[in-house]
Length: 109
Image (cartoon, rainbow, N blue to C red; front, side, top):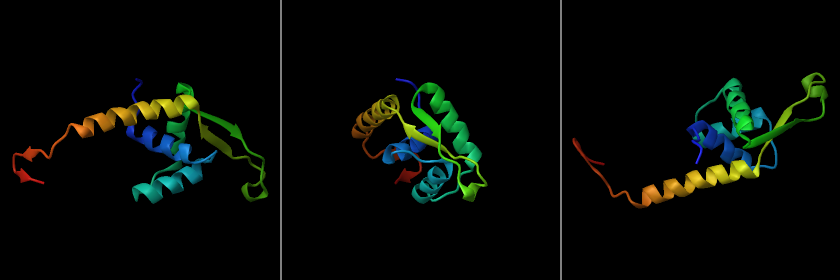
């Protein structure tokens, strides 16, 4: 199982919820779920890294007048991305199932 960073995991889950989306849509979804902001450069770094791993693919959309004739890059999760995150989720589920409420040095939560 290849390691998935926490930000990779969240962005990959966002992509799996959609057919395809661009960086701003990913940022909006992230901010909605995580209740904190994220920069577009941070998202793009993660997307490029996941594209190299084969978990994500992208294409350019059509140019729009709203963007001054520029095109958006659209991203989507690949089957490899789905299976990578599925393995992580299964491993986490097994770990959580074995955890009982721990006793901490300074009290119980």
